[in-house]
Image 1 (cartoon, one colour):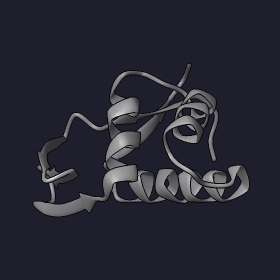
Image 2 (cartoon, rainbow, N blue to C red):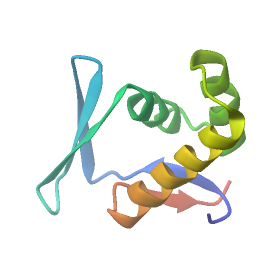
Image 3 (cartoon, one colour):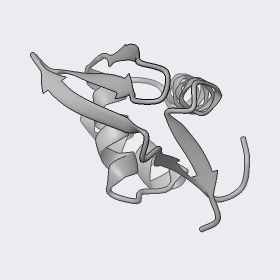
Length: 91
């Protein structure tokens, strides 16, 4: 993980569909689907929340062990970054 905050790319549009969020990367035309938890993370990223704030909020909303939540969140952050859906910005 890199310093700063992960921010959604301006090249990505999203739409909520039945509790999930569908992302479309406008430069690549690739489509991605985020489940309920991933959709919540995407919403929080869009509100300028940092990793610690997101972890705290998800821990409140979902019944999952903190260690598992950290692994899942870091994995999602890595995927979003690798696919160009989000990028790291200085805090």
